[in-house]
Length: 358
Image 1 (cartoon, helix red, strand yellow):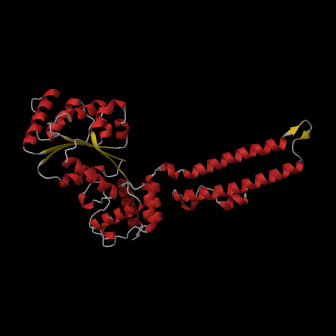
Image 2 (cartoon, helix red, strand yellow; image 1 turned 135 degrees about the vertical axis):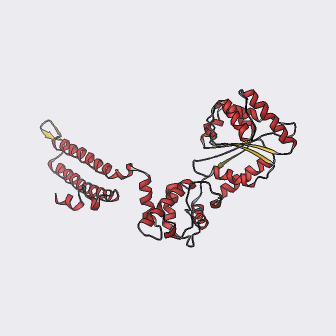
Image 3 (cartoon, rainbow, N blue to C red; image 1 turned 60 degrees about the horizontal axis):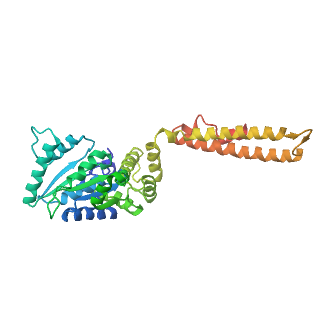
């Protein structure tokens, strides 16, 4: 919708792993080097972890594009399977015929024969398990046992586990110590830093055909990084919505205010109800302060007040002054928050002037 307005050929911030938009940060390049080395040297087990949206799947797509025709690959995207279905899926993804096979033993026999044939043809065989943090303990053990398929000189199957940080916690458990010992390479994929976030945005705009890659000003990029913490998928979502908002308001350059509006919408109703929290907090303060004044004014010891009348009056004066300031600040904040939530002119919220005139 906004492509023509911003001079773009395509939408630059789709969340699908399109290789045309690939940006390799320092962490991505290092992870790719680890994966390439592990496959070339037949290291057996490799584990890559990273937060949601850091680009693990994109990284694998890049790796696969670099592999030659002598590599056979099975890619398991949803590992929430039973044991038999797990082996059936692997065999079928390698292109093997599984008609008539029903037991785990039959699938394993077929898989072992396939691996030996590939070894004889000097072909590499790779199993990639995405979302590996969701693997059940039973399937993790089956994956470990698959690495027992080897010759005296080489592993018959290379296994790459991709997962969120929870995978590291799982592998640290004592019951998986045998699996942990077989992991040859591990790498944690980090989010983009502030500089890389700016480069990432420019890279995607260029790939989408933008003549002007300065569509996001410095304050906008800073705000995007602050909110997304450098996670590429979140950057895509914020940038896409910011361009749409800029198109609606006919802004040819995206600034911090547009980005903040987008972030506020993304955070949902809780953010828009913030003015109510301010108002209720002020009410609670008023009630507590009123109770304190009443208590102080009536506090005595026998027939003699605990504090002199002059002291009480000074204290009351200071409390009332503080309450006046608090009330004024509360009104201003509530009006400002209500305006951001879409109430024209802060309708329904008392203004600061009205508070003073009460």
